[in-house]
Length: 216
Image (cartoon, rainbow, N blue to C red; front, top):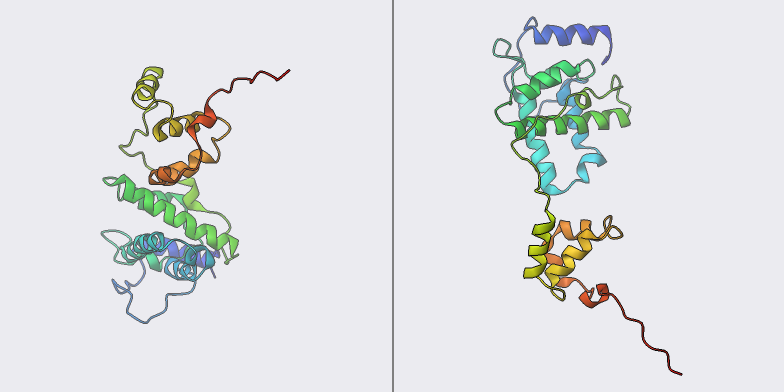
């Protein structure tokens, strides 16, 4: 049973290479052992949390998790990671899995993110032994990306000089800089900038209005 002392001993034995080696690949048509990481991942594949994902995300995540399960525990231990009991997997072992791909930080972070989602599902589904998410205790690796450059005032002025009031580009800047529209408009624009052509707002709506003289 996951979470029991027996599972803990089995997990440590697998890590130390002290149990009988299994096949290097799971034979087609065979079912994963109940309580193993491979078994939990198969339950996750059948869950609404996974099936409702975008097709491209499902494909990428399945590839990450399937490859993870097919990796050996270590160079000295041919047992597969997927054969290990998920309930007794500590954060230190998840960190070790991440560090295996230190040369490729994006790939390492992909493994952590995928494992977080699997265990998050397990906890919500109340699978035995899934009481905490060890992958959440393991931080993502820093990548080479420095994020987006923050514009200076001079750069904003340079932009507005090239894109004056009345252009869609100027309207986009005004919307992004508006604190009122920050939560909605800028997010919609960020989703797909090509949709700018379909904006129905008019640039003159953002111009200051002058009061009309009242008729006597």
